[in-house]
Length: 167
Image 1 (cartoon, rainbow, N blue to C red):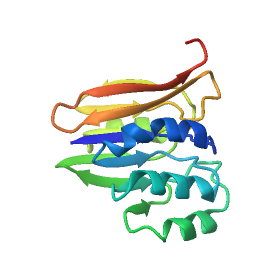
Image 2: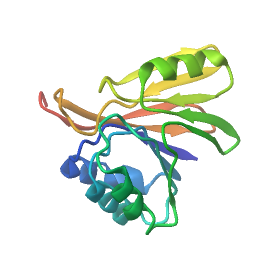
Image 3: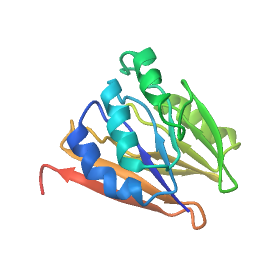
Image 4: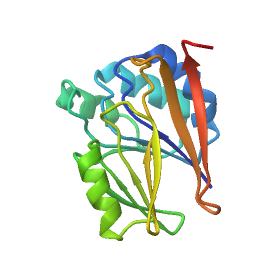
């Protein structure tokens, strides 16, 4: 099973549309926060069909009530608040927005996979038996737009570069 992991969209629907073919081929989608506006939820959900989507809040998510209202129109999206504790394909997965919390969760040893965002810096670290992943940013603020596909059987990470200003 492939899980798409993304973060920090920051209203960049053009990069979100670039991500859509990868999202559509995933079995689940994790968004680590900073969607920002309600229209991003609509674009995301219209594009992915019935694929389950899990979202945690970031520090810049705007009108959470309106985002939640928009998300409520779709049965396959779950807004988890600040933290998500998931089980997908037999794996324990934690998701939040902040690196400090992500690091602590990884070192707790309770999870197979921990995902976070916030600093817009793509990173991958093995912490004992836990894989700690920051998929980078969809937004592209720092000249690169990335996401991750994670294979639940092999635990392999595939980096997807949606855009690179140097390319």
